[in-house]
Length: 179
Image (cartoon, rainbow, N blue to C red; front, side):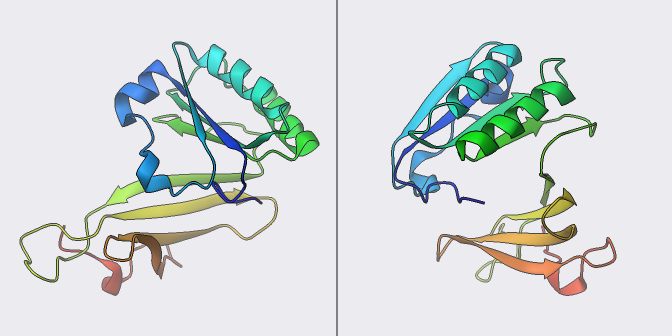
């Protein structure tokens, strides 16, 4: 699978109105892209799905990212299957980010769930927040084994670090922060 930003082409990032309102626009400096980013804010989830499908037909794109908030009928199993087939046919990677959506049928090759965790301890002040952390759950994968991890953003090095695997569904004691 291609990495976001590793290609030299343009990345198309499509958001519906509610997703943009909830999470804001992508932070261009924080993405570390090697090519340009084309932001496309749209009002309706149906328009997002249409734009993504059209974007996947463009072989000049390095990737397509879509953000949709909630459970909209436009994000059906059939629509996601069309996106998966189009992404495979054009060799353009596609990521669909569904905010605040319930888990349902999907044609995605990999399905991830990401949730925030309390921040890591701040080494200089135990009362201050440290590096942000997330619980990352790969709960369905056609190519690999599902699993759960704790990931931390190391601000000093500006990278994501795998802090701990979660083998039994609970956080390891060493991975807990003081939050």
